[in-house]
Length: 271
Image (cartoon, rainbow, N blue to C red; front, side, top):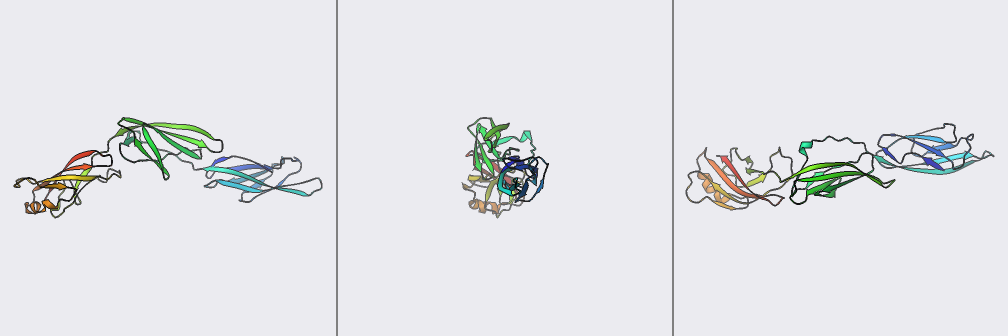
């Protein structure tokens, strides 16, 4: 039994297979069955034409083909044909946003449409598989890196590079300083005792920053400005509680992010 047809198809495609016996008589039409459904047509050339829709994952089509000998007794054989199913995809790009942040787990997704295996590599950046995507990190202090996507047809073993894209490599943007739930420039709650350094909602990066130390300043307050390690400012609470409504409380902090860079961040809050 022989089954001829595509070895790679996109999900939802119409698939046609020709099923026949290795030795056949064009005047003696076979009888073909398909275990997975579909239809069978007979073009009167000694073959059966199987028609079926491609599914969403790899398909192994099976069935039987039978042909009668000269005595009218059917000879039945099993046939099998495997098809790798691809998921059609499109892509939209914003070239001005092609940025990789140093010291940060830049998440990337890549698809080699028309191939059953996608391969993503980098030049000037490391690429590590992570779940359904990749983690990309710039190497060194270079200003540019390249990502290359290739497709591999595992049925033929052929690999083809499809695209090469340049990315700018930059440091992570500075975070904003928060006193409790208030961002720098907003009204603060004098009873709050925690400082945070983080990105506001308009920066969609999942980077955590840690406050190393802080110093608090209130105009006209006597003595040296209080300070401490970490983000707990409770040692400045008594001074803050004594400040008049409408006064400004300022914090100067040293913060560090996932890239290991220490940054000085200042924040001012109105009481």
